[in-house]
Length: 302
Ligand code: NCD
Image (cartoon, rainbow, N blue to C red; front, side, top):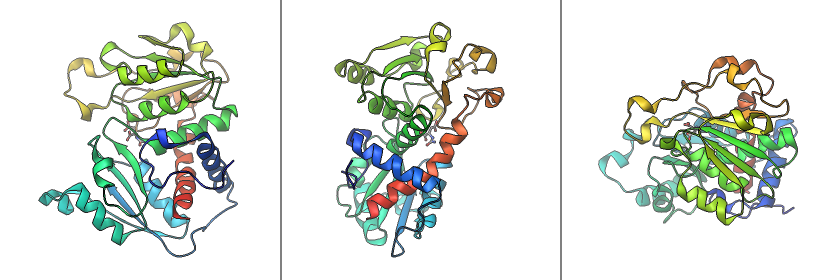
């Protein structure tokens, strides 16, 4: 395993090699065991730039830099920055490089990362660009899967909910498709099925997958069930937009060793009675977010 991650900016899961993922999971687990704190020698500054709402991603990054011995500056609201005066993302990236040592950016536009990093001189981490990518959530998802199954290959993964607009699904599927012998079931209504682009990626990687409307036929075969909310901010809403919530009753046949993940927030797509199942791992997953982001910041700031 290499000692350093292979990337300077983390903009896409396609940059993550298997060694990068192992290194980061390993480091995150060391933080989780409390064995490694305050790694950053001089006080480093994280610029936390969120142009879309966030709870877990933003606060776990801000908490992570403080735990490492650094500090953060942020946008209280995106409209308090000069972007609201018409400043370009390119100019903002250039300027923020002078005021910080590392930048986390979330933005609704798919092209935002490319524009923002045109002139940046410090590492930039993609915290979500539109419906395209969310690589740090993928690292957290992989850490949580590995924690339970001790492997990232030879898994059967079911994805349930809005698979079309969910960047966490897009990023995780791409990453898992690069491990051996993984197979996928995409459970969604036709309006929310996984995108043709992601299906192409799976075909090119020779990963078996099915696109179906309900869970029943293979629930007992799943190692992971990944649930997502409807991304209502990314399209115009109609009555059919909302999913019938997944309930504990529908999960009666779930295998004992399966874990249920959800990047959160959950809204109305997953009933809280599922929380009582041993298979519910989504709060462990969000807890892992802090440790994985500590590992990532520390690696990129070395
Ligand atoms: C996700 C996101 O922002 O894409 N949330 C997160 O980062 N934990 C999922 C979502 O908003 O549905």
